[in-house]
Amino acid sequence: MTNYPSALRTPLSRADFGPGFQWGCSTSSFQIEGGAQAGGRVPSIWDTFCEQPGVIRDGSDGKVACDHYHRWPEDMDLGKAMGLNAYRFSISWPRIMSAPGAAPNEEGLQFYSDLIDGVLARGLVPWVTLYHWDLPQYLQDAGGWSSRDTVAAFVHYADVVTRRLGSRVKHWITHNEPWCTAIHGNFDGMHAPGLKSLPTALQVCHHVLLSHGLAVPVIRANVPGARVGIALSLHPVMPASDTPQDLEAVARHDAFRNRWFLDPLYGRGFPADTLALMGDAAPVMQPGDVEAIAVPTDFLGVNYYFPEVVRHDPAGGFLATRVIHPEGRERTDFGWEVAPQGMTDLLLRIARDYQPGEMYVTENGSSYDDVVQADGSIEDHARRHYLVRHLQAVRTAQEQGVPVKGYFAWSLLDNFEWSEGYLRRFGLAYVDFATQRRTLKLSGQWYRDFLHGAA
Ligand code: IFM
Image 1 (cartoon, rainbow, N blue to C red):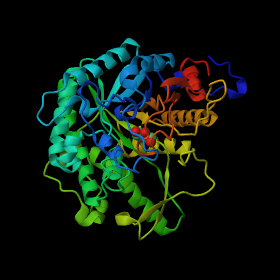
Image 2: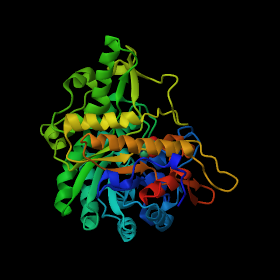
Image 3: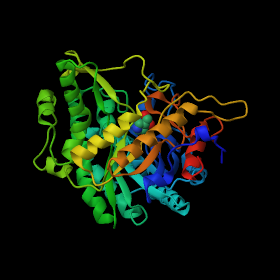
C-alpha cells in the first residue's frame, strides 16, 4: 500500500457508500479478449470492420487485444488484489452461436463458465453483459439489428447463455449503450458495421430496445434470483447560451440522447415530439413493442463520461442541434470534458424522473496519454484525480437519496478503444501490448488503497 501524506488522503471511504456496495471494474469481450479464432469463435462485425482501411486510427484490430482469453486468471488475480468485490464483463456472442440455427458452441460456453468460476473463486460477483457490440457477422449479413430476426436471435442467445451460466451469475445486463450500437454503428459510421443511414440507425435502436424487453423475462425464467437491467450511456445536456433557441435545442437533444431510451424503458413510450421530428425515418414498430420494452427491470446501469453542450443549428440534422466544445474547460487527453458535477446531476435527474429501484454506475473513466517512467511506473495523477472526484460525485448523489448501489470503473485494463484502436488508454492497469505485461497505474493503486481503506 502507498503511504499517503495527509494532504493527499481522500475525505471519503469505502464504508461511506454502504454495505454491499458493488466495487468493480468493467471490460468488454472484443476490447480485451483477443483469441479471435480460438475455441470456435466466428467473426464479429468488428473483425470485419477492422479490415477496412482507414476506419481504425492506428490500423489495429482485436485479434489479440489484451489476450485476456488466455490471461484471464492473471487479470482476475489483479482484480482481487485491487480489492474489487465485483467484475463486469461481456460475453462474445460469436463465441457462443457460430452459425444460424447451429447448436451452441460448447467451447465458448466453457470459456465463460471457467471465467465465472475464476471470478467467484476470487470473491468477486460476476456482472455479465450479453451484448457489448460484437454482433456475429453472419447476422449482419442478414440485415443486422435493422432486421427483426436479429431480435429473435438475441433472445435465443440470451436463453442459451442464461440457462448455462445462470446458476452462478445473478446480475445480467442485456445491452451496453444502445445509442452507440445504433448511432455510431449505423448513422455516423464510426463503429461497426460502419453504415451511414438515419432510418437504419433508428430502426436498429428500436430493435435493440425490443430485444432487451423480450430477453428480460427469458433471463428471469432461467435464473433463480436474477437481477436484470440495461446499461445506457447518458449525458447531462447544457445550453451553449441562454437564448430561447438554445434552450429548446437542449430539450430536443436531451429527448433523443437520454429520453429516447429512458422513456420507453420506464413505460412512457418514445418521446412523441422526437418521433414527429424523425418523419419518414421513424422506426417501424409493431403492436405490443412499446409494452415489451417497458418490462420492469431490477436496476439501471448508468455509463457516465461527460456532459454535452449544444446549440440550435438548423443544419444539425433532424434535431437541428449541434454539440459544441467550449474553450477553457478541463478535458482529458481524449478531449472529453471532465465534469464530476455532471455525474451528480445525472444521477439525481434519473432518480427524480424515473425512480429506478437501484442504480449502478456501470462505467466511468478517463483516457490520458500515459507515460511509462524509467522505473516502469505510470504516474497518472490526472486519472486518479478524475476517479476521486467522480466517486465523490456519486457519494453526493447518494447522500441526496439516489439509490446508487455500485461503481464500476472503466476499465480494468487498457484495451482496444474501438475506432481509436490502442491509442486511447482507459485502464487502471497499463498494458504493454508488445509483452502483454500489466502494471497497475497510480490511479489503480489509489483505487486499490481506497478499497482497502488505506487511501
Ligand atoms: O470503451 C468504451 C466502452 O466500450 C463503452 N463505453 C465507453 C468506453 C470508452 O469510450
